Picture 1 (cartoon, helix red, strand yellow):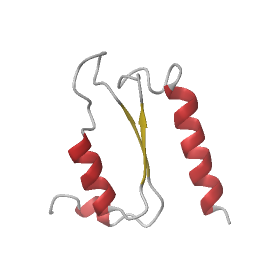
Picture 2 (cartoon, rainbow, N blue to C red):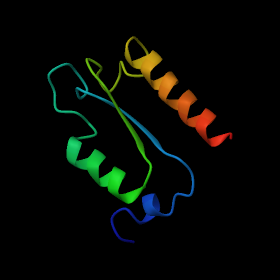
Picture 3 (spheres, rainbow, N blue to C red):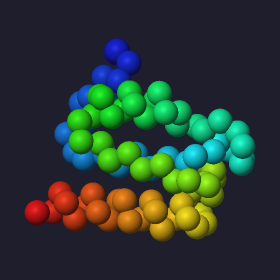
Length: 82
C-alpha cells in the first residue's frame, strides 16, 4: 500500500488538531509541518488546527488544547450536519 493510501480513501471530513511541541515543551512536534502538509494534500478539505503552547500530551487534557480541539471538532461536526 502506498504512503497515504488509507488517508486518501477517507470519505469524511478530517480535523487534524496538532500540538506546537512534541512530548514536552521545546521538543519537535509529533505531527510536523511536513506531515501536516502531506495530510492536507492527501485529504482535501482537511481542517488543520495548530494549538500553540500545547504538547502532544497536554493538547487533550489541559488548556488551551482541550478547548481548541473541542471547538475544531464541534465546528467540523456542525458543518457536515447540514
